[in-house]
Image (cartoon, rainbow, N blue to C red; front, side, top):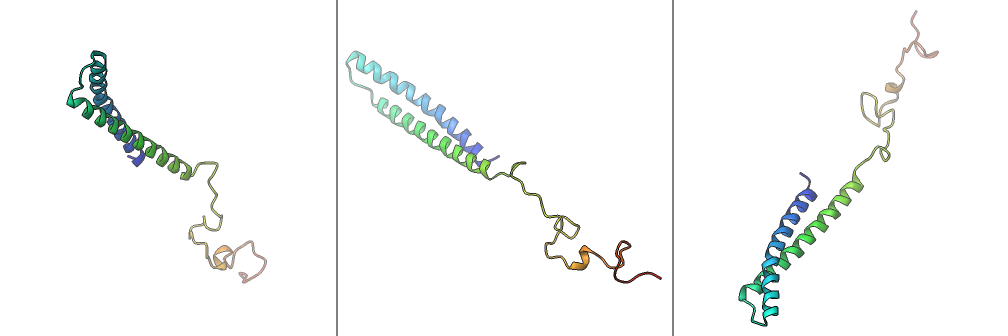
Length: 117
């Protein structure tokens, strides 16, 4: 699994956990404001924890998107590929081949070199 996929999954899980923590915090805060009473102590913890998790998830998702973009820009596509040289595609696969490997002696099509009697 790619690193950016892991970041997307972890970011999504943190986002859901953050929303689940923010919901009771917002509910307690709005109830306290509407009734003009004091907030419970846990309200601030719910709001702070949920907000921190949502921010962390946003950072992870953005980091994953940047990694995916970087990966997709470095992947060789059909249009961006370069064909190998014909000499390097021969069986030896070396670019520094000796000259005799390209045109061996005693080849029947040659008009020079040693001939058979």
